[in-house]
Image 1 (spheres, rainbow, N blue to C red):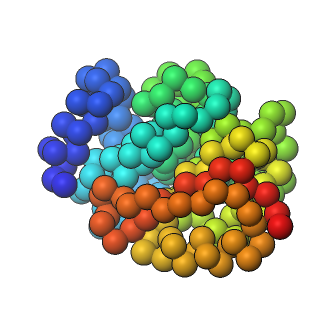
Image 2 (cartoon, one colour):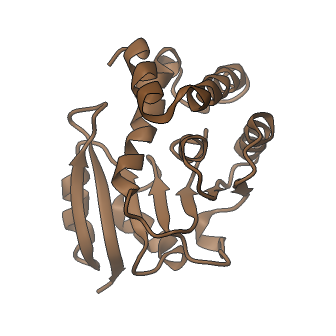
Length: 206
């Protein structure tokens, strides 16, 4: 998928106004890249295909999620959490422990006027939400078993987990099922054919 194709993909599904917000987010990301390593420099030229569509594809997987907050663990540059916040009318909480990234995320939220988005400057292990999340996402944070252990206190049996993984997605699921039960499956990524997205519900310890 080229950058032009990625922009068209976003525009066709979410409209021009949200594409415009993503364009402004892209500008802020590229500007901040001179100050800190938010994403791999080799992917700055392919933001739309490599990062925005890669994040936006999760939205089709959460269409039946319950009402409530989208919790993004280890948000970093805001992927996929900020993309979800721009494209969805749902409250989003970004959990990020690194101070400079927290500052960047808050600057983006203020700059794009995203009132439903908040940033928690903490590790997910120490974050205590008022209500359990409806959706939990995490991109390149930790292997599946460790991630579930870290964030399970933020979720309940109705929470939908959407977790972009690499080519080891299925093996991570199989390893995690030694300690965790629930309904797990792996969706293929539309941006990286050899990668998968772990989708899970009813997750609880064995």
